Length: 545
Image (cartoon, rainbow, N blue to C red; front, top):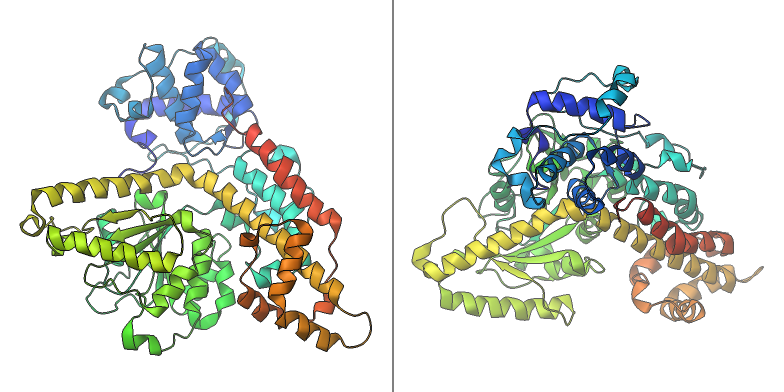
């Protein structure tokens, strides 16, 4: 399964890669491994292509909409320029052409003379081109080292993600720290949270085919994968790209600065001992990370309490994931109490949820119609939304579809459904940057509402006597206090946190010790949402628009 388009190295000879490496070093004016819009406008002008063609070249090369071209994307752009100069129409499908490798580098007027004068080549990164160099861009780790917010020069921002990091550190993080947002809602963000690959989480009752689904997509097993009719996956397993095949225990994973899992330490050692990472080199994992979860319990097994807060963990992952797949088995359509709570913990992430009716070739067509109806009825009671969820029907494993059970029409249906689901997965890397902006805006709104709530509660506290009694009264009447905040600031009710969860977190604090609302801080977040983020997107959009 190819994700994110064809790999540029596979359709480019080493001889051409060497030429493109020289060109890339020349075009990259500040030597940070990224060609931004202004760099591209100067360099691509030498191709003498019309602006409309160059707009299309950039749109295809920067398919993830990061706002810059790394070396791989630069190769793609140059190949598209070659195609356009030869009179071909360019589109996303152009990258799949078998004769792409035979096209010579494009004609760039005056480039040879400029290269001869340039000193950039001396600074060129001298890397072996067996793979091709992955432009990592400037390191932004040190931005997050200091506890206090600090000014980051605008020149240091060379992508949309860098811009979000800068806005978080300068404008949102101070608000979160002041009002303890990390203890109530979500841990503070780190550099790796912004840079993490898109994630797909699989949820479902035991033996619905979650692990087999991942194996089916990877077309191979992964370290630590266990499959069986009994509840085999007893832990959260993150399947991600790595230099070799190995498993990393949860406690180690949570303290690694380059991994986006430090926030899971809040669930304690009992959870971390049931959490691990499975690393392996795989082309699909270079674009997407999978999260395999323990089977949700049903029946008598629900009475055995887990040693950690299962729904809390699924909620944490739901906020980080780009897609959540709920898997069902036609023979296990009952939604257990624990599964209900798990689906409830996905509140606010409805747009990420996709439902998969797996193992559908185990029943005939008539039964499938009844099962589908029953599933929609069950989901309607749990999801509490008037919209119908998208349900993919199929058999996602490596065995051929049982045509004897479903007939030729069923087989064709399964193949179409599988193609639809795979195209949904293929789009994830392209939409990852948009999703990150979306999650960032959601977080900023939640942090602002949290600050208003804390400030309001602080204002209700007496200055001298009876503080404990007043605090208890406020905690008991949280719904009413939320309603007052909502009316005062004209905020939507759906954006407020769960009352019970907030009440529980508030119990560990003395409200009197919180700070009052600082208008300067909330205004900074408003400015960020209303001006800074739109301006950031404008600066890193297609330079030919």
